[in-house]
Image 1 (cartoon, rainbow, N blue to C red):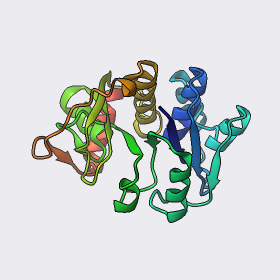
Image 2 (image 1 turned 90 degrees about the vertical axis):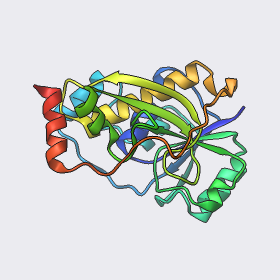
Image 3 (image 1 turned 60 degrees about the horizontal axis):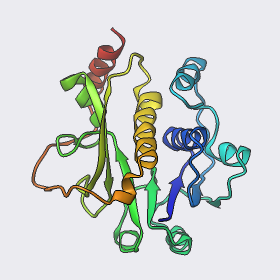
Image 4 (image 1 turned 135 degrees about the horizontal axis):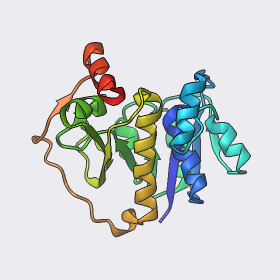
Length: 227
């Protein structure tokens, strides 16, 4: 079984890659969609990220180079770009871990490879956007569902689900989100869950879909974490 990962230069990819290296888990293919945008982080955010197993200030490319990992690099951020699709074909992987770059469309979904998404919500109860905020408000916790991506939103076959306590800090987007997703990825790979191929089919008609959370509700969720 060949497993690859399509990386970007965001916090999620940084956490995924650094934790894979820490656990000495080597994948079969690495693709970096690098639009070279650099985000600056405060010392407090960087310090908090390090407490949770990754350095948010280290770029994805720097991690790849530092660890002598062979990778393919493209200069755009578009999961559906024809050049990326051709690259994915050539890598001949069974699975690619998706970290971002848009919504997968027909051409890429029709490839023989399956794409895995770490969704920050326990589906079918939390589908859609910013689900961890709603879950923190409703349940004082959050969760991640790994599933096979398909043509509809967050309805693919479930690979694995893991619940997490709410964070004790305010950096939910920057640190908590990439932390819980990366920890779920590590659990799947260490447990060889993909090899077992024991996935659970979802019923798209069941569950709840959420949309980008209102700033007031987001603030309430953050207060729940730092009070």
